[in-house]
Image (cartoon, rainbow, N blue to C red; front, side, top):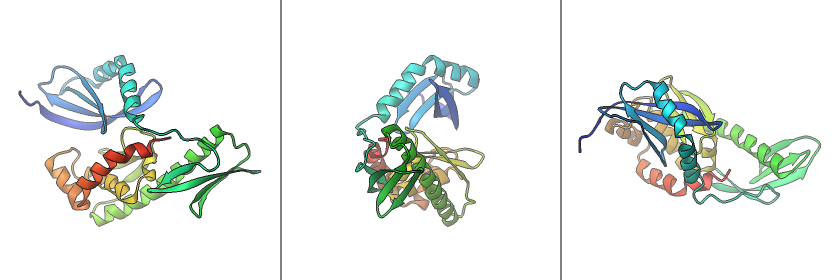
Length: 242
């Protein structure tokens, strides 16, 4: 079977069904049609080298229901249900913290002594959920930006700009503008897995592809990357519960 030549591989974003979906566009010389694949790496779109982006995304809109169903099926795999109440256990950097909910005159969420303490004026499940997710996002940006800065310096790289995403099927992404995006949910994972994802994206600053040179750079930054990649694949459902 003839192997199609990869011309480019870039990260894009599209709105499907009201959801913001990140996807990798792989353009290949000799390919005739558009192909869609959803797996642990997220959504990958394969297309002919010269096909206009508008036509590619037109096809994606036509396949919107299939794409969203596949993403939902993958992201929902073995994911437990979280009950937004006092005493619930929540993950943070690989450890379990107890959610403590109390009624208060003003809203405040803070981590103290292994507990995530949510003091809310109206502690309904919906408001607890919203307040806890907001806390996770603040904690994620602080931790991920700090680790990215540190690991970039160790790797001899200029630290990139760090942003958060709400992606369910992609832990991180990097673009040619030297911007990296991480799913805020990543902060639920153990520190070693977080660092592996960061090193993966930092390696893209030198190789905007998944070539042999790219993986050599990942290994240079993170010698245990193979082991950690397998562990993340096997346990990632634990970090997608909400």
